[in-house]
Amino acid sequence: MENKRRQALVSAWDKTGLVEFARGLSGAGWQIWASGGTAAKIEEAGISVRRTEEITGIGSILGGRVKTLHPELHAAILAAGSDREDRIREGKPVFDLVAVDLYPFHKTACMAPDSSETIELVDIGGPSMARGAAKNWAHVISATGSDSFSGVLETVLEGTDDELYRRKMASRTFSRTAMYDLSVAMKLEEGIVPALRYGENPHQKAAVHFSWPRSGFGAAEVLGGKALSYNNYLDASAAVSIAADMKLGGVSVVLAKHGNPCGAGVGSTAAEAFQNAFRADRVSPYGGILACTGAVDIELVKALKGIFLEIVIAPEFHEDALARLQKRKNLRILRMAVEEDAALQLRSISGGLLAQMPDLSIEDVLNCRVVTKRKPSSEELAALNVNWRVVKGVKSNAIVVGDSRGTIGVGIGQPSRIESIDLALRRAVREGNEVKGAVLASDAFFPFRDGPDKAAEAGITAIIQPGGSIRDEEVIQACNEHGIAMVFTDTRHFRH
Image (cartoon, rainbow, N blue to C red; front, top):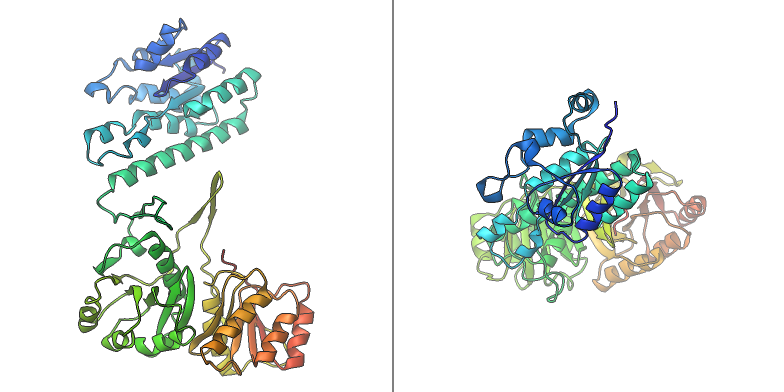
C-alpha cells in the first residue's frame, strides 16, 4: 500500500536555504510538517505547512525544551512494514523525509561546561528525530544538517532517492549525531578529565577523551607529577603496547620516545630488565617514557639516578620506591595495568577516519617455520622470541637487533629496509654492544638478499621475519650461504 502524498518533517536551527528547500518540496507535491520557528519561517514565505501540534496535541512545554518528543510523532518516523501500511490506511501521517538541523553546540567552545547557556544548546529532539529516520532508512530519507537540504531536494526531484541513497543518508546521520554527541561529552567533562595545554606543538589546541568503561590511561592513577601532555600520551601508549607484548614470565621494561622504543629488555627483576633495555641506547631515553610490567622497586629507582624521564608507568610501586620517585617534581608517575588495548583504532585522514582492529597477534616462535638448512639454537629461539615482540611496536620499516635479554640496537622508520638494518647495527656498535652472535627481527619481508648479506657481515646468526617476498628463495639462499638460521612467522607487523 502506498501513501498518495509524500510527507516531510522539517526542523531547522540554521534556516539558511530552508525556504528554498520547503518551496521545492511543496512544488513537487510534498506535504511539509514543522514546528515552532521552522514552521513560522515556512509560513512567512507563503508555503503550505502543517504544524506538528496536529500530531502531538502540544505546541511546546518546559519553555520549549519539549516540542517533538512524542510517541505519535516518532511513530510517524519509525513506522515500517505492516505498521506503516496500517497508519496509511487509517489516515495517520508517515514521513518519507526527516530533515533536521541540530542546535549549534559548537558555539559553546568558550562557555563553561556547567553554564545554563551550554546546557540549552544540547539538542535532544533533533538527534532523536534524525536517528529515528536513519534507523528506518528502508522507508525514510534522513537529512541531517542544513548543508544537506539542497542535495536532498535535487535527488528527490530527480527521483533517484532509492534504497542505496537512503542508506547513505542514514549513515551520514549517524556520523553527524555521533560527532555531535562526542562534542557534548567532551564539553561536559571539562574539569573532570585532565586538560591538555596544547597538542604536538604549542600553537595547536588539543584535548583528551577517555572512553567508558574506563580503562588504560582513563583508569590510570597519577601518583606524582603534573598532567600528561598530548605527546606524553602518544609516547606512553607506544611504550605500554610494547611492554604488554613482552610478558614472558619475568619483568619487562620499555624505554620509549617519539612513539618508538629506544630499547626494551627482560629480566628477573625490574632493575635487570631496565639495564637490558638501557644498553641499546643510553642517550635517547632522556626525556622519554619508562613502562614496566612488574612492580617498581627501590633497586630500579636507584638505577634511574641521573636519568631524566617524563613518565614512569607500572602496575605497582613499592612504598620506598614511590617516595623516592615523588621527589622528582616533574616526573609523572602512573599506576596502571600494562595491557594491550583491544579497542577499535581510529586515525584521522583528510576528510574522514580510518578504522582498524588493533594488531593483537603475537606469533609463537616455536611454531613458526624454519626455512633455512640450519635451525636456530634454543638460545637463538629465546632471542628471536623477545625481539620479535619488540619489532612489532616499532615504526616501519622496522629492524631490531638483540639477544635473549632484549634489544641492543633499534632501526626505526626508514623508507628502505636496508637503511633500517644499517641504523640498528650502527646504534648497537655505538653503544659498545656485541653484534656477533645476535639475532635480527624484521617487521616485514626482505625484498632483496642485501638485508641478510649486511646482517651476516655484522655477525648476526639468526633472523625472524614474516616472509612473503617474491624473492624469498633468494633471501633464504643468502642465509644458507652465511650459515644464518631464519624463521618465517607468516604474519607482518607494519606500524605507521
